[in-house]
Length: 109
Image (cartoon, rainbow, N blue to C red; front, side, top):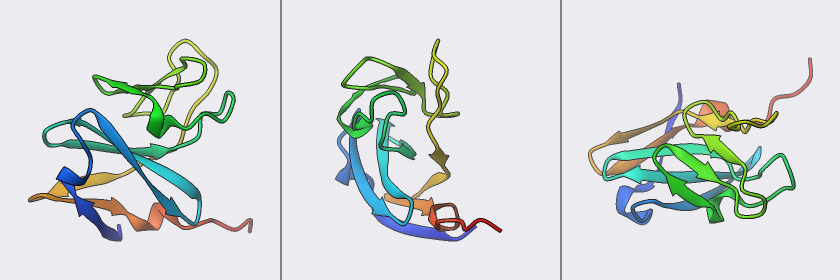
């Protein structure tokens, strides 16, 4: 894994989100507790809603447009046929690191 430091944990409010731009598009960072952050696609597959503007509850995010709920561990939509990409994140001290290798656009071979 290629860990990239993307910021201080306090850059994301508790039960809040921020987004970063990557080669794959926007990725949302969700802070679900004092020491827990998840990373996932910022775009809802249903209608393209910005998930970083959704409601965080437990380890889930609810799309602000049509209330689809996604598990931040797996990306799976609860009760719906849909899924968002998730990305490995870890906390070291007070810094958030994301696996940069997963954020590189992959070409068709």
